Length: 208
Image (tube, rainbow, N blue to C red; front, side, top):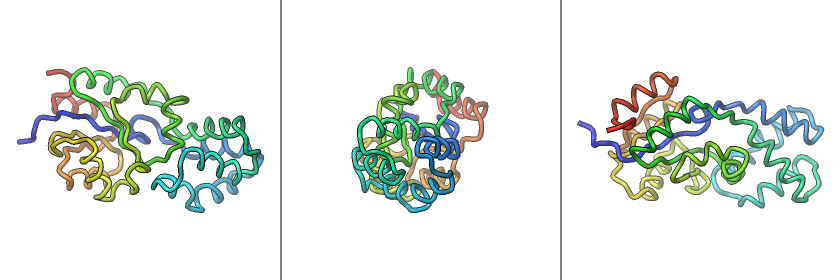
């Protein structure tokens, strides 16, 4: 028998938001005047984004480096435009947001995502409606590693200061779900809102 869930932990891309990476690349391409393939190569295929996700840069360093990579003036105005374009990879899902808001009346909520400091800034600004649903935000850049690495879940558990069995985790990536279960978390593989509602209800997270 599972320990009663005392914390809801949600993934971001593919769960709280639709994950639309091509839309972000297009937005950065339009801002810089570069072809989308060039933006993809400079920012993503180069490993820069992955390094940011793993905590190798601060927010200001990411903003500065992105302006440099895209050939933009290194000033606050252009950095703000890059930050806004960065958020375009994420389209909030109102049905999932509604479920999280309901669950939050029962247990605290945490967002756990493989992302760097730019996305953390987005959640305080461009994606604030999503960020405001959570009592705590845990990013891979805080941990120095990404899901599904077991170390990411161990460090997240330490930060949360909670019995692993009391965590109810939702992610769309089966590898992340399996890693969470290996860490002792309860975990649900997100496929659609209907199944998520059923899983949260069964876990007692939509009212007790």
